[in-house]
Image (cartoon, rainbow, N blue to C red; front, side, top):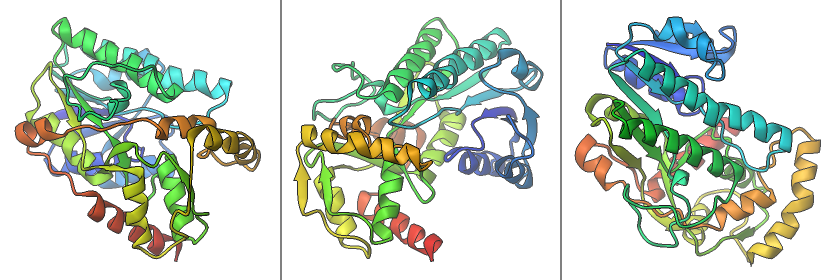
Length: 329
């Protein structure tokens, strides 16, 4: 099986590459900078490197010819972006999806797997949603907007007969995660978490990065073209998640829950400060709004049809916080 993978150097991508190679498939990873440590790491695993970018359709042509499968896993996740960075995100998440899936369809690639996100469905309003859920709320972040547009591109192609299998991970958690959750957990294990939080009663389905990588690999093997599979673990409220953190060494337990308007007011100067010191704005008005939404999803279809398994949040956070403590030590 010859397979072209985009996004192999990312948080999910390296773990996905390992699982695809373990299945005996020949993996060609599309990379922008083959000299980077991340790309060299993929080559050390046994992947072949092909120089190209999802934002430049023609750059993928040679690598995509004669493959049996394309796995489009490339994407940019970040909250609190500047206007300039938003345009870059759109080029990667929306136009990159249009380029990659469109070229795969034009070249008649027999099987295409696209990594979307549950945010493509939007705020669930507290109900437990599955793949049939229809968006009810406007996007809570620019990232969510781009993923919804990209998801619509994939869905439209599939409806016209393209052999696309779509997987939608929920919030992906694990050591080395650079989302807002990842940055906050590192503050916690360093003892720097201030004991202030928001979004107490909003539900979120968190999924360990290793379970997501395995779920995508299973979709490559067993997914049905035209179908969507949500990769979502256990749903807990933010309050419950913070209680799990408090059972592990680190910062203070949450003593003050801010309402969303107060949290956004607090986040406004914080995002400016974080950018000024070269950090991502993981505490930002957009991050507050994104957290104060219900992302409550079921992974039952992926479990039943693909054989996917998702660890519970107690185990997920225990393993992740321990790994972050070990990395810091």
